[in-house]
Length: 290
Image 1 (spheres, rainbow, N blue to C red):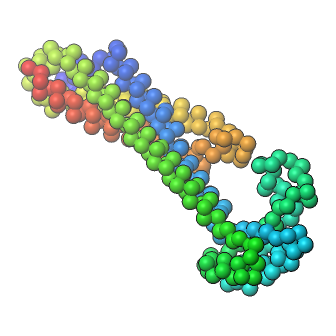
Image 2: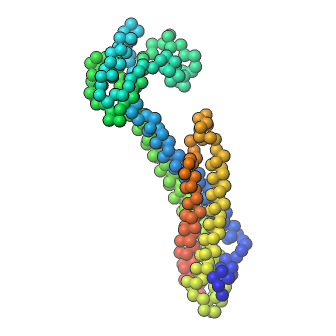
Image 3: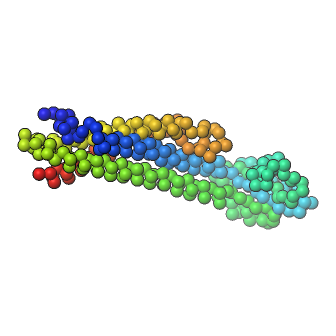
């Protein structure tokens, strides 16, 4: 009797156990695609945010209206003569209005508000001596504050890292749940076929031979289910809003370029997980079957 024939005897073609393994593998793979997409997207967002804020700074100049132009000119001269500063320019009223629009609404009357002047600064890769630059600004332009965006970058980086950790934890939990379901289904299937196993032993079949046939069948079903769930998950991710559409909160979630190859690993991981779980369960149950 071949292993394939033994697997057909021990593992039925239909029934709750069959559907449990296939559907659980499909559902877990579907969820794993989203968890994987979240993990990849969190890493990409952190990189994009870091790149957007790296080597940039802002100087805020506060002074009485009659001294604002003079103080701004002094700050610009200090920045242009500071090593590590690639460029510095005063932001226009329209640019400042665009920055404040999210907080104060459109059509902001800048002339009626005592707003500070903002200077956009680009640093060289080496960067300036920030502490020395702040001291120089405080001496020559007391109302100038140099902001290198550190307070913005740190929370963004920490938030993205925490998001990625949660996504990776979700992948681990998904794998654990899938393994538990396969172990329960495998245990129930073997226990319900105790008489068949006894007959196979009588005709000379070894436990290793029976377990191998059983594990092969369970692994195949889990792999096919995981492949179907992965395909559905990839389609769902593909249907999300285009990353270029900044108006959607989901625009940053998904795979890009070669990242679409990552979900292809999920059926393989599911197959390995199913094989290990089913094998451990099979030998455990067979030792208890007399």
